[in-house]
Image (cartoon, rainbow, N blue to C red; front, side, top):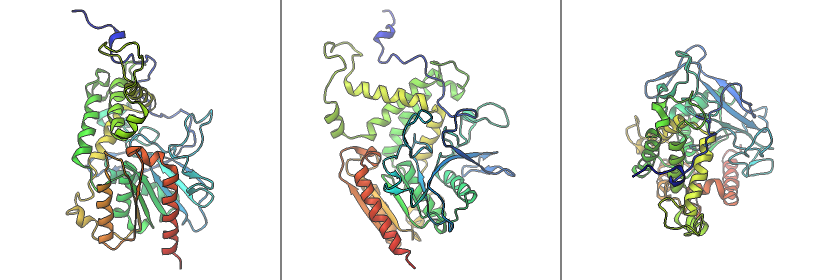
Length: 402
């Protein structure tokens, strides 16, 4: 039997996808600023590795007041970056990932707040990560990049905050992987956080989340274009975009819900006249293909591996005796938000978080957003998120009135 033609295969991937979508020096800044850590000594990592001359890329909106007490840190999720706000422009082709919530007069009001969002350590949009140049070799780190954790990222953000003159954040806010950073901020630097808002996250990654993550990483690792992480010199179309796109498709299944897939796609076919060929696609398959290719154009496969692993390693109890002991002195006012239909980070995990914080005596606002959007609801349900933030900021204001 002859090999199938490209037309018979499940996906005819575009040939113009670069080996990596990572930002690199010389690319347009698009609002990025940079903080360099450890100019006199390497940045030590939780897992034992070291990074020399590591940088954090960040963006800001609004103005820091004279007292430096109006700063809010927004933490992004797995494939996010520092561009949390702002419309799409010729210079910035995509709107900020939380643009509906951040800006003048919006829930996170930049007329009042100085808002900062930093690309995480290990990321690919300006902060030091696997696509960055290893000063020892002069080539991209690839898989020589050391393992990084949520705590490493928070320490990098703390270094950035100090450089910005921010001793204490009014609030640290984020969803999913961002919510993990939020929680660690309150545990690692309670004196530097007046309040937190953790959305669709957990005190520790669950076996269910780790299982899905493992499949995504495997999809990348078995793509021949990945080449054991050494692909940065590969011509367009010959990098690990296939594996990265499949990893994104696996993740997208978990980010939405059965209800939303049924409403949006049903059993619709891309070509209703063709049903029985092996690779004829349902519309939901086309959706997964589209978003997989879209991510492959703007992200880096190695960063996906490292950040995905960073999420799996999230465990507030590690090195602290247990999760209960980690939260035993938790005192930061907290907003804990769930999405009702979230199957990846189900509401029971946020209920556990709220109970841990309350048991230590913290003021906790618990919200469950009634949405069928699944895990991605924290990015989509603008009105409900805005209402939760407004209520929470009012509560925090009342707690800190002299």
